[in-house]
Image (cartoon, rainbow, N blue to C red; front, side, top):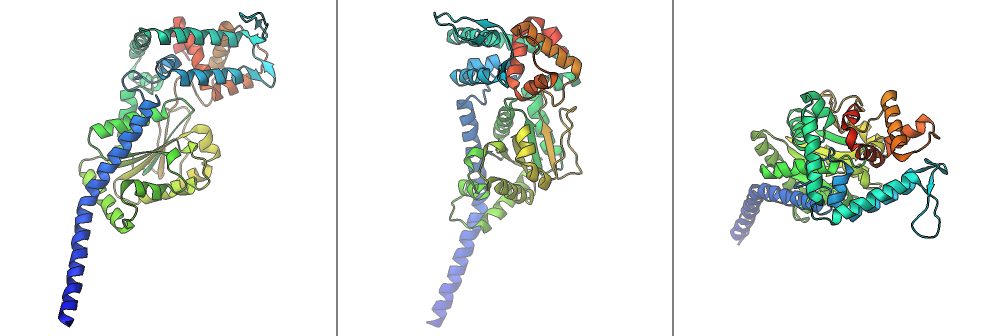
Length: 401
């Protein structure tokens, strides 16, 4: 009887060991499958919400806001109307002293600048309803691309930094060559951070590379635990996960590319415990071989809300004069999107040129100090885009900016 008990015990040990071996052998493939599935799902979601438009919205920012409006529809029209109300009034003063009368009998105090933008939107809506709308803006994009292609290569990269192939290729090259384990993409709102990440993830998926694409808004207060729960059965012990992640990293190192955990828009999760969870994610995946964490964040939130996190990750402030720079001596890297129409500091001749263009198009009087215009240009990317849309016939002059 005693022999049977020992035999049963040995069989149980062997059974557990056998099951553990199967789990450790199969689990990495299961995790890779789930990572790809989650990433594809988020890319599809961004396509659905028009944050990522691969078929039409190819050259992201040189198409200007018009193409995004054409494809995005009502969502962006509402956004512009909302911005119109806030952008043309500072401290109770209108940027234009001109008034106009609505087509109704009742007189409305509407600044001429605001009226011009409303008419611009009405024109857009007509084009949106037209069958040839997409074709018109595709041609517009092609003309701009041909113009930019005439520039030398270095200027082309800076000027059209968000161009798809250049940006994705550059980011992927950085992921391979940079010794940093943590990378952060920064820019102002609407510069195409989510779109760049979507292009990159989509490219990695198509090349059969393991990649995990996450939306910070859906991670909740305990991001690391939620990631584990998404990848495997929550009842599975963590002891099985780490060896599996380790095996995936080593296997992909042979292919010459790191496993990238991508977290979009960390500034959009307001949960107090999210920052702690984000640090936990960085520390966990940084401790694994051949893993890198790639995050995106708006400039203003990076400095205000995530200052402590940046100090913990040892991230230096990016050089505003450079489109892309990283320091191999640091443990984290900043990948900054500085487009040709937005800079952290404006050189006065360029600023004056923009103000002149504003006066010319919107017929506004110079009732504001320079610092207010600088603040407007720095905080409102959307208004800045209208400058370029309004000056389509003077592209050569715009290129000087």
